[in-house]
Every structure is written in C-alpha cells, then in structure tokens.
Length: 495
Ligand code: FB9
Image (cartoon, rainbow, N blue to C red; front, side, top):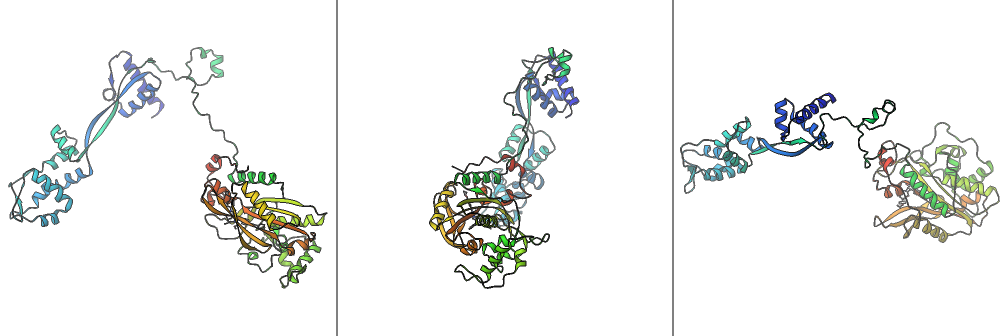
C-alpha cells in the first residue's frame, strides 16, 4: 500500500477518534468509510505500536465454507440419499449395495439412513421403509455454497459431520491510546544540518533510541575455513620447530616431481590420466646437470647398493612441465639445496595446492591442499617417525594412532596413518608417511648417515570434519556458498 493511501487511512481513523469516545469496531468502521478492512487493520497495528490507539483483537465467524467431503455431497448427493436411491423396490442384499456404492459411501450412508428411519431389514434383504425422501443435506450444502444463511440447528448438524468449516474474520475493537493526537508526526530519526540551522529541532519529536536494534552488518573480508585450518596447522608446525618451505610454484618439472624422488618414468602416476602436463611451456629450462646425471644413473643402473630400475631413462620425460602432484616435489628441492651446502639437521613443512588429474567425487576434486612435514637428520629411524607423528596428531586432538604398512615409490618403509577421532567415535585414515629411500637421498649428495622421515595429509579432510561439511564442493570451488565463508566459526585445533 503506498504512503499516500496509508496517510489517508491514518487521517480518517485519527479524525474519527477525535470526537468519538466509544469503542470502534474495525469491521464496521471500514464498511462505513468504504475502506478495505485489511488496509484498516495494518494502519491500526501501526497506531498501536506508537500508542496512538489501544485495541483488543476480536474474531468472528464471517461465514461458512464446504469441506472437501461437503463439496462431494453437494455434487453427488448425501451418502444416505445415494444409498436410499440405490435400493430397488424389491429390496437388495447389503453385499450388493456395498458393491454398488463403495465401502465409504455405504458405511456413512447406512448409519445416516438408519438414523433417518429410511430403511428396513428383511431376512437377507434391505428395503425402503418410506416411499419418498428429500436430500436435505445436499440442499443445505448448496445453500451454504451460495452464501445463504442456515438456522443454527442445521449448521450444527453439518458441523458435526464435518461437512462445513468456518471462515474467521479477525479485527479490532479500538479507541484512543495514551499518546493519541489528531496528527501523527513521523518521529525524526536524525539530527540534521537543516533542522539544526533552521531551529526546527526544538519542535521535533525524536524516535526513541532502540538500544536492542542490531547495527548494520559491516561487510568486510572473511577468512575461508581452509585458511583458518591452514593457520592452525602452521601454528602446530611452528610449535614443533618446523620451518615452512617455499611452495609458490604450482608448475614443476617432472624431474623434481618424480625423477628426483626415484619414481620411475613408467609409473602410472606419471601418465596424463593422473597428471596435468603443461602444453606451454611444455618443458623446463634448466636442471642441475651433474645431479641429473646421478639421477639418470640411479634409475638405469642403480648404485649405493640399489639395483635401480634397469630402463633407459629419458631426459625429455624429465623435462616435461606439469602441475605438481604433491608438495614432495618441494621437499626434494629443499633436500637437494641442503646437500649442496654444509649439511645441518632440518625440520621442514609445506601446506599448499597440488593437482591430480583424477575422477572427482563428493570428497575429491582435481586439486587439494597437501600438508607435508619432514625431518632430515643423522640416524633417524621408523621409531622417530612414529614418535613425531604421535606428537603432531595429538596436537590435532588424536592421540591414538595406528600404522599400516603401505607403499610409496619414494619411501621405504611406508605407513598409512590412522587416528581415533573422539568426535566421530571411529578410526579415520589421517595420512601417509615413510622414510625417503637412499636412491632419492644419496644422488642429492646428502651424507650417507643422513635419513629423512616424512609424512603427508590433506587440508580438506580435517577442514570438512571440523566444519561438518559433507561435500567438498561446498568447501572449495565455484559452487561455494559465500554465506558459509562469511559465517563459519573460528577454528581452534592447536594446543
Ligand atoms: O588427510 C587425510 N585424512 C585426514 C587428515 C586429518 C584429519 O584430521 C582430523 C579432524 C582432525 C582427518 C582426516 N588423508 C590424506 C586420508 C584420506 O582422507 C585419503 O582418502 C585422502 N588423502 C589424500 C590423497 O588423496 C589423493 C589425504 C591426502 C593425502 C594422502 C597422502 C599424502 C598427502 C595427502 C602423503 C604423503 C607423504 C607420504 C610420505 C612422505 C611424504 C608425503
């Protein structure tokens, strides 16, 4: 309803009340003034809010309407009349009558026809007790449908059989309220330059300050849940003395992503069905040639006690550029850099995006964020790996771990890691781990008593568990609901 119409109705009500002290019925007022009652109701509600009017809600039955059952009888006749009409002059068995009418009409019609004394029972037959009957129920229902009035006795009879239902009219009995005035000035909500300079502020009525009103939402930046969990993981790694590796290159050479890790060039993971290779620039520009030759040798002929793979290693395969399939490519670069200078023990970690050309499903996309930790020191063993995993995952809230032997091309031994999640009350696969193979470490030039323990997991899985997200598309990608990004809670998983 537009403002002018509202103003007109408000003026009519306030003007009427000015010299009228009795109680006003909103229905009568609307009819007398030619207004729609619904419009009057919304204006009265507004005047109640500003205490210009006091009002008592009232409810009346405006008229009756047919229920679905009532409509059926108004159309087909009442069940009792249908039953009476289905009885031939010579009578009929109940079974035949039920078959003719159907169970429901027979059941309701029989009860009502007996009550009306329209039937008499023979040995096996039912026959008419009277020669003629009127279908008063149908006649009454048609009257109701035409908006005609019925006497109370007839209405009660139809109500009892649930053939009619009331249409209620809701209105107000109202009168002047404590703050009544002939005209409602819209309370000012701001002290403006105009009313200050013109002095009109002195006569203005200001709206009372609503201290419980919420402030306008301040639109600002919001952290994605993945970034909140990433920060928690970074804090855990820092607490454990780890340094972050530089992971800003999504594009990597096959050499650092696979060959340096002693992953053979025939390995299925190096196929384009599993890896995104770049068309342009398709090959890497520079590699450390002396190191490349040592890698070639370890793949082709072995060395350091290893038999190698015995295949013709191809440089052009190692030169192919790809989107890194794991952040272990960064780990290989960092370990090679460590070997190049005077060796010192190090603890490194990385958390960033990796890409795999795999089938996507509810929990897997063609990319995810890998979390990887490694410790490089002299004389490390599997016990050290289990110990550091216990420390790391206990900081994630999972102190019970189990390990299962596994295989990775670049670690031996390797273990899948399982943690008992107290919230889910079940064991959850939480990552993979192992000791980098000598065939990876020794060609880098690391001292032969240096070993490296490492493990990896994803960022998406813990984030989905922590935020109760079932489908990864609700967490990452173009279908993410921005409201989730704005409203997700804080993340606290570190100690
Ligand atoms: O993250 C995984 N699960 C997980 C991790 C944390 C977690 O936290 C709880 C709430 C507190 C819950 C679950 N997984 C690894 C296990 C599974 O989700 C698995 O189905 C999916 N895996 C990914 C690989 O899928 C293509 C998760 C990802 C993964 C697996 C292995 C590595 C990294 C990521 C690795 C490694 C590695 C091994 C040796 C040396 C260096 C790196």
